[in-house]
Image (cartoon, rainbow, N blue to C red; front, side, top):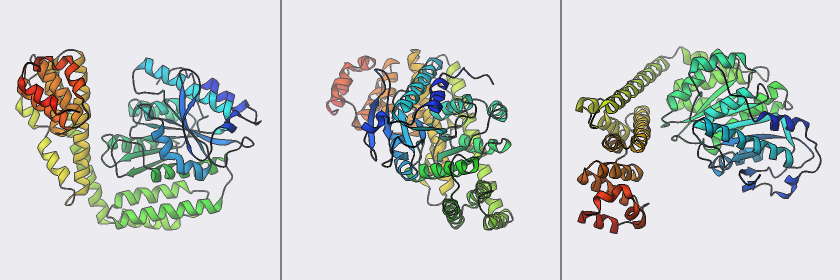
Length: 473
């Protein structure tokens, strides 16, 4: 797999050569989040400097990349762990998901951030870490591979490889290994993708870990962020970039055993099995792991584990079938001359059944989580397609896509407004006004926005429009 020539390498190489003299970082407040630090007229970042920071030693640096440039979100999530372990966290405001020109802009933003890290702080060039969420997790994979062994580790949240798994595994087999810590929420629409990455990495020399948390498509909570940082500290001990601490290793092993036992007690034998297996690998060369090995062997011979494995395989199959049904819907929608889709194609999406399963969490929690993921997949795909169709002025087609999205999330104000626009433009006034009432009920729209929205112009002569607008802010 050919990768673009990295543009961040010059700033990274500068880190290795920088002096340890007093730095301009002395003027920045320590032990609290600094909301914005300006690099130049274009670039800026959010920052966390540990309260113990001084220019007289070198520090690990975590570069966090959010797909919407929400720099404060990852800094807040990693702040406590950074303070406890002595890491600097910098998160760019200037990175985004997007096409090739956007990726080139991201390269420039990361280069600017690293150059400023060299000017202001004493960065340990052996301890440079990246964290990315969603599309920026994919981007971070590219950065780590491009750096050819100079990235000390990667934290990937809510997304997997930036390309086909087989191609990336082949690429990683040729690259210098670096540790990878993946995270995903229980209802993250990319959960299966993240889990597949963890399994695929078994075929490489990359140390890797996966942590799940109760949540959606998002950055991990602070507790999981701390687990990621602690795990990377262990990896640094194993590679010799930090001093080995038997006490730290023991405490981390005890925490891992506690997590595994809690998973067993909660009736999650597959997750406990993964935790025990990971502990054996993580602490090889650091301490004995006989008790983890004993529990792993016991779980492998437990009928409950076999039942859980079959159940998870069944859920995975249903998710694949759901994705196939979405693809069939989109193919038919694209080919439709008038934006209509056959009823049986819509029925195959099983939206009502998924909504019922989602509500049934008391009886089947794992099934309810899977239903939430499937609905999230449907919502994201159909709203993305709706936006593409709107930009192409295929309003009847966009209305069909948004109609399905609204089935998945009936009261979502954003999709209701989009459906109102598409329906108004395709001559479906009743549907447009109903969707507009839903959008206004969400409480985020102003009268001025509605009165100036050109896509809603066909509705203005309808007396119902004025009544709906009057309920807006």
